[in-house]
Image (cartoon, rainbow, N blue to C red):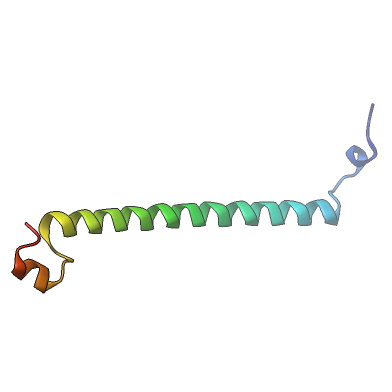
Length: 68
């Protein structure tokens, strides 16, 4: 059984708009997810470096010997 929209040679404006909106939303979701993953990695790396090497620790903590 053929449906009426299968006979059209080009898609309707509504279908094109829905498709464009859906693809834009998916791109934004992907962008936000990768930015969140990058920020999470950067923070975990920075805090690990701060704990291990004292790079981000205040000088008063290093002077007191609270950080190894």
